[in-house]
Image 1 (tube, rainbow, N blue to C red):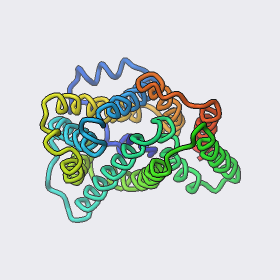
Image 2 (image 1 turned 90 degrees about the vertical axis):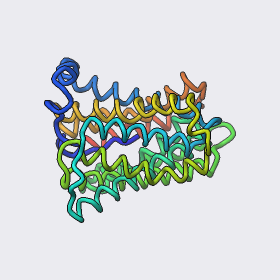
Image 3 (image 1 turned 30 degrees about the vertical axis):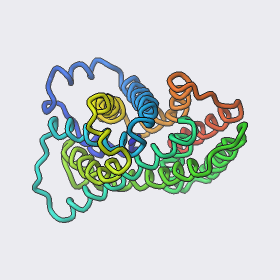
Image 4 (image 1 turned 30 degrees about the horizontal axis):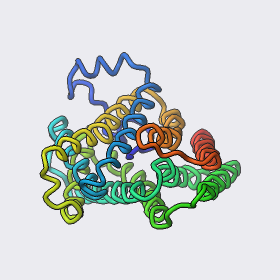
Length: 300
């Protein structure tokens, strides 16, 4: 998951109208922005659930590598970015790719060990922390406490949670917070979707050694490659594109509020696709984090 709460569409790569094609732009233009955001969230989390089903074949690292590789190829073909970058811009692009690869690696290692909805809820503490610490309102202390209560309740389900999985989810949260900050710099230093495409390409190169060591020759298996393409489209290309168009047409604050439903959507995707049933107390925990995220985003 790579959602970014930033001001303006430029932070997500700028408007693509006229670059991808008038037909595609017209098609997205007919869909209300809130629907674009929700469709992107659903695509992202259903894609993550589908990716988890591939772990037994290619491993978590292998699936992440295929996702980033195919996403990079598609976005490089769409945006055709220039490689003429000054030193600072290059460092930002490389840093963006490193954080992106690390975030996805940690998240997939987490969902390999704990339910998808739980992992995404813990990971969501990253952007929530950015929103809370970036505000000076006293009310945000309430949202921070509510989110903390939610995380505490997550561990109260029957059988508890794998501590290693929780650790990877927390690492993903830290990296997501870093991703937001680095992503803002990427939006400042690059134009259009070129920076996004190059960043994902660097991330794919960084993930490649881990994917090869984890999956070996299975990465070249035609069925695995086909499944990896589907994961890349559902978890990267489609949600990024939908979010990009939505941000062009709606305030970033409203975008952030809509994105706050992501933990709940992840839990539903885990339930429907993976049959990962959560305890009632864990559903309550997810609601706490969602409410805290909405509150922090609106007050921020």
